[in-house]
Image 1 (cartoon, helix red, strand yellow):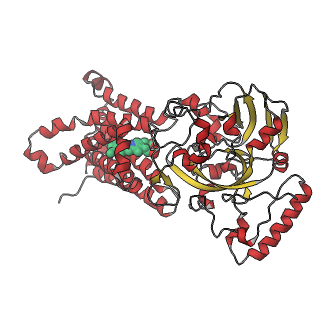
Image 2 (tube, protein in one colour; image 1 turned 135 degrees about the vertical axis):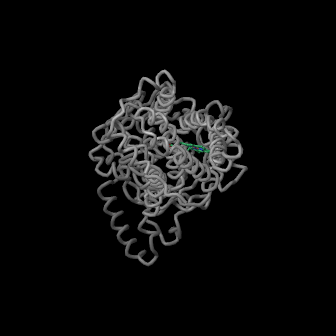
Image 3 (cartoon, chains in turn yellow, red; image 1 turned 60 degrees about the horizontal axis):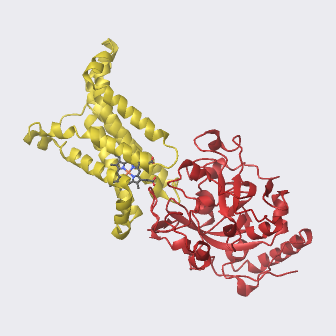
Length: 210
Length: 313
Ligand code: HEM
């Protein structure tokens, strides 16, 4: 197997760090007496951060003209899916012990849970269609499917907005970041925000790709 | 000395159930402490427990054990300090709770400004093991000490125009970092209908597990209304006013669709965010069913006859 590039290694380590952080703190008892609550919130927030990081790759590559910056897209996207899965499973299994007589009414009377479920299923499709052999077999179907990431992100952000109690500032901040990342993809704007090619950037770029 | 009749839900001070072996020693201490208290606070009523009255374990009347003291003092909702439930324990450590005056006024014959210590001395101490159900879907069983709000109400004599009681928490952004942001309309405000305030279950609490309230639990004095969601039980009270109009609580002001004035625990009225049908009892694995009026239906349902509880949530 080919040795992965530096940028991919960095992305992998970055994806594992939050889980490590949580496990260490959990072992130290930092989330007692109700670790389930903290895990739900921590995994949910981490999933959103990685989703936005994944969406930030292409605009950043354009701005800095560094092809390496586009590479962590997939790693961050998968990380987002795994954290989102941990988030949902915490809620369904650790919190509710899969008791459907309690869970079904919750999904019926809380639209934000249905949004979360829809988003998770979409992320699952994106994760499955990111498998190389699927992509090879289906020509560019996977590219079309992967455009779903934008509506999926929007669903997640709405889910988060309604899940948060009281102070909605972080949810609004994420929505603004998402908006900026979308605007940066508009062709007219894309060409305007590019900064001058710098040799130093290109040196870093080569190192990251190596 | 008057001896108050003990109800089954009343408890003995912490020292007495900790260990049977130390019982003799501690009971002597308690007796002398009680004698001391009786000497300096002539109106305080102290019960000296007998061996037969000592429960082997602290339980509520439904048989649930009290939540661990470290969990009650370590996991709190206190937005004046932080929205993270583990942080108030540390952030509130140096919160100054003495001297502390409480202002009682509004539509009453005897308005007063009084030190908490004097209030405590003035009324019979009661000890109650109550369930506490948070609107966020978790719960605890807490052994409180305090006095009946009713006793205070009878003392200050509300006029016939008084329909509601309005409580105001302290406003002290220097000591309470959460109050430095205007995200919430500080100070904390809560309210009860006068008949709810007069109910036998309604306490002004000053202690937990036989000790003074910790700052994070609402020291030096807080409300406890066990059949309502926890946010009704306002902490660190500074003002109690008797009013004609229904007070607007802090949470109502923030989102009246989510938080009603009554906020009675009701598994049949869903909240847009958390389950009200089931709850996580802190210290247990798995959830349990939430009970109508938090299990105090017998005691309080008469307060709400004829009311549509889905409208008046
Ligand atoms: C079946 C799918 C899902 C379920 C059942 C679910 C459930 C929940 C619940 C119950 C909460 C409230 C937690 C609390 O504060 O008590 C929540 C919040 C949240 N969820 Fe989900 N969720 C799902 C999918 C997702 C997905 C796919 C993402 C992100 C990719 C996500 C991100 C979040 C975030 C960021 C929060 C807010 C956490 C906070 O800041 O406190 N959720 N979710």
